[in-house]
Amino acid sequence: MLIEITAILRRDKVVPTMRALDAIGLGAMTLLTVSGRGRQGGNVMTDIDREIPAEYDAVSRITKHLTPASFALAHSLSRPVFWIPKRMLQMIVSSAMKDEVIDLIMSVNRTGWMGDGKIFVSPLEGSLRIRTGEQGQESV
Image (cartoon, rainbow, N blue to C red; front, side, top):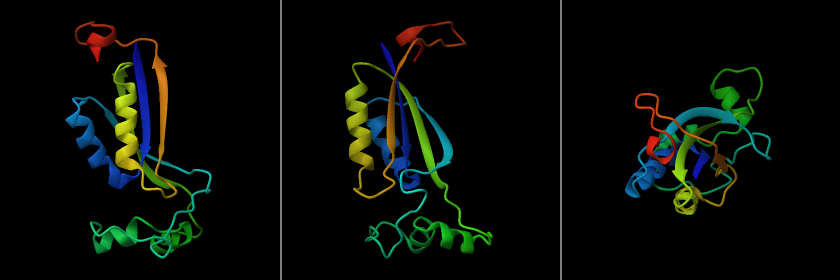
């Protein structure tokens, strides 16, 4: 059985997540740029609210942790923006790999702070490779 895993991630967690997925042999995935908001209504923590990891450079500290109001000021907007830019990673895996992939995504992306993301898991009815006509697991 095939499973579709969709993960909504922080932008700075995409590369580490993709490297970790590559390391377990999962190279095929789709990456989309998305915007959204969670229970916090689009409010994000600022630098004052939490410690910034040392690996962030000065520009990242300014641009990655703005509140909607400060984002609006920085971009000359007339009102606060409550849509947070994220990345959506989609992949199709066998049911045997499902738990390993989910655990890996969780371990790479969990910071303990608002906005860590979401993972959605869905059974997939079918899959076809257009070029060859392969179906099911062989098409992935």
